[in-house]
Image (cartoon, rainbow, N blue to C red; front, top):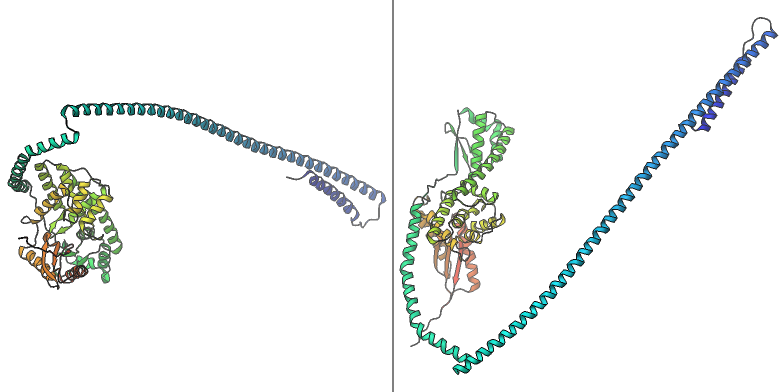
Length: 533
């Protein structure tokens, strides 16, 4: 957009250039070869001047037109800028009005809250006054009642001639004389009856529960076999320079054994879940036919996701089979993992279901809550699903996991933590779980370990402990899960007993093979006995 002064300058410059050009054209015209004609020269000069005047006039008109257009554009620009400023000012005014309106609303709300607080304060003061009046009335009535009681007691003492202390003492002495023999006889008869019936009732409950429920436990090994269509497939599984089998073992965490056995490939691992994932993945790869590192990793990841869903489904089925409320999904997943965990070749999930049903049957016989008892039995070994990942025994791990994932029942938590006597047993459901656990683990066919091997393991435990100086006796209890050592009080001190306990535990770790953990307890005490003659 040109300024009017600039446009005028341009027009004047154009005018001068036009006039100068005309004069320069006339002045520099080449002389003709003809003789000089004065009249003709004057005529040409006149025409040049006329042409210059026309150019000047035309330049002046163009300059005026440019000035007018520049002026119009300047005015339009000024109007546009004025409108923009007006719009900005209007926007600021609207914002100010909006801020003022909000401030007024806040003031109104604050005033309303202040009025509401005043009303509540007045109501509170009224209630306090009423409460003070009622308290005063109650105090007056209590005083009046105490006076009446004292008057009646005084009248009674005057009538009987005895004080209150003497009357109470005489009444108690009379009651003791009359009831002493009767109470002693009833207590004695009750104790005899309890002794006669308690053992029989306990045997009856256990026998009934065992008879009403019995399940089959399947044994799992540490290897799985995968059938292959031909021995040529073994080379494809191994891959060029062994890259396929290395990728597969790295992705699954198992050992793949490809030997001369026709028609099968062996998958070996102590972790049953990883072994099952590897078996399914290898079967998929054999069926698919595409066996290379990238495809192996894809199939393993897919199978792991399928296994997680399968574990959740197994856990849900176990909860439904036990007929208890559904716990947290993490606990459900841990129950599913127990399906692939064994203890002495006994499937832990089947064992937990058996313990749950036994607890429910015994609780029903004893008049307790069968559903709560089944829940305690179902979750009692849930720590075995994570005992390889966390420190401590499976009762402690299971109680911690159950508490972490929302288990609020004190009975369930105590049963998980105390079914192996790791804590003081003060709950009836914990006793039921311990009894059902012992029944399920010790019944014929439940565990693969033979009697000779079991007895030999206990004898070796006791022999290791008895080999230390100062140890008098050693007893393996809780199916070899705990070792009680009796130390000679005259040959050892308390500090030496601590050292002996630690040394025995280290010796067991180095010399014996055993599942789980073994708790070592050293007992040292001295007793003094005398006889009064």
